[in-house]
Image (cartoon, rainbow, N blue to C red; front, side, top):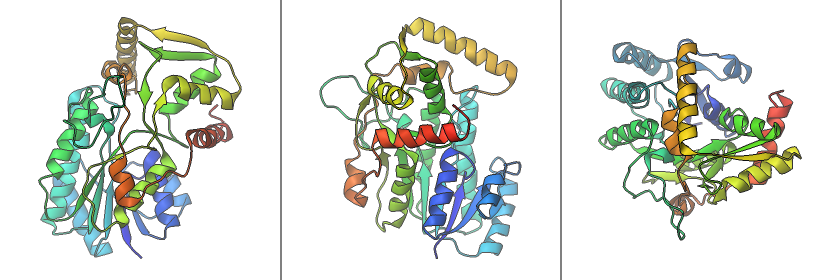
Length: 334
């Protein structure tokens, strides 16, 4: 039985990784923060271990204790990520410095896995214009439009300097599924008969259902020779209108379509950002996010993933969105 440590195991993607690892009979240890809610892990009988990623000195002692308890380790999935912050420093600290603290602590303790898989993001790339049949590819120049994307580049660049154990970098596109909060906002808006577009109705997206994403992750862990990074999506391209149309069909509702001009978007983002600051909790919609929303195309090429691990999603967008909406309804979120 392979031993797997999942760092970042109590969030949206992390919970699905834990469930899939358990289904595949891995010996799982969930890496958590000291104040994490452990209800999900306890319910599913998944052991946890607390790591203080913000303090390298404490972290080194924690990893020494972990090593003493669990001895060898086969795999690590490092799934920590900050997607909502008030400033660039917070993104850099959580998405880059915490990772560096963790890797350096592994090195100090001479404690190496057979492979580490790191969750990066399509956001390290620059969106492409709506023309021809262009796709974002792994070897494109990295030129992000958000502070989140820039912080993930720093993390990738650091990992590329590590040669003491194999590292695979995964760059998933927008992820949806049971437990996600970002698509829930879109679905709620459509349920309330409002269909909002940023600057233009025509925008192309890549998407990945969370259950298909974790399948890809375990495929990358299992393959002996992997050479990342890997862009991960379901391999298709969707217009925002198509996505909204599918959601409307499932909900059996009609909407009023609204196209928000750039200046209006910026103003709304500024207002939302300042309201969030008063509340003391950053939200997903801010001035930085506007750059993401107004992009013409986020369509990516997954040929490399398909060729190397024969990845094929199990669900169509319609099937996956049906499951996602049912989960929201069953949990009284819609």
